[in-house]
Image: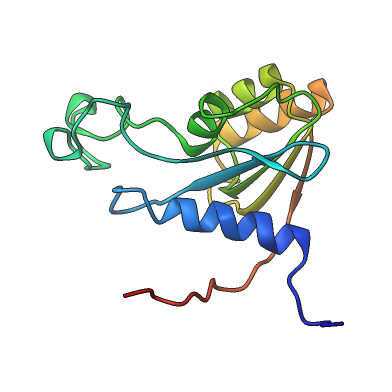
Amino acid sequence: MRKDYISWDEYFMGVAKLSALRSKDPSTQVGACIINPDQRIVGIGYNGLPQGCKDQDFPWNNEGDFVNTKYPYVVHAEANAILNATTNLKGSSIYVTLFPCNECAKLIIQSGIKEIVYQSNKYQDSKEHAAAIKMLKASGVNYRQIEVGELSYVKIT
């Protein structure tokens, strides 16, 4: 039997990282993968515009006047994964490449997800992060950080 296969954490984070590659955001690409208690993928998502909105018709800047930045338009990866879910999410886990913001934490809690597995936490000193942590602790949602190597893939031509 082969012994050098990847763990479940590596597998599901790999799916999240692969999903992030679909993002058109030039500065931050985030992916999410939701699994049910039976370790089956039930939702995936990445940060991008809502359906029907063309990427080229909206700004992707992260500085300047609010309406001329990406912030009022982009749906976060966690929200997309929850909206794309194929089943009830009670008791599920979400693998996400970046720790969820406070808005996504609300959606995660409300959807019944009980665990967040994340890779990066670059906003850990922000007030949004503090609010997310406060809500996650109050609601009993667990979170843990993992390290996963770079995805290697075969390019199919």
